[in-house]
Length: 97
Image (cartoon, rainbow, N blue to C red; front, side):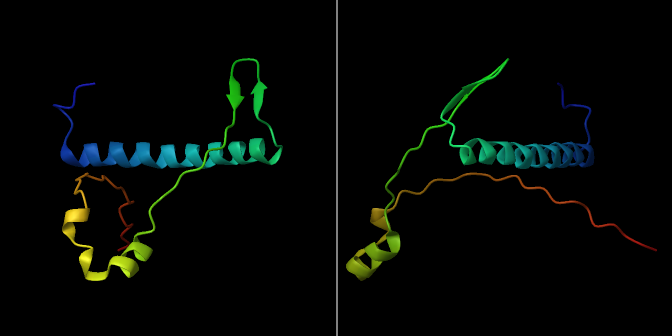
């Protein structure tokens, strides 16, 4: 798809519409996945798809506790800075005359 002839407002609307549809689809998918887990399934073969579930654990650093222990010694040298750009959407408010 070429974006050269799409105005900025049209691009905003395309992103918003796609995001709205995606969130609705994700909510529906989450309900199906919740049911899969509720049934205690680990792997199930359908007619077209095989669905499996696995559980994993992760360990995360509790920065609040680290700050309590290190206090002022916890300076910027302990952190790695990363940058990301988040594109968010919200509907345009309806104006009434």
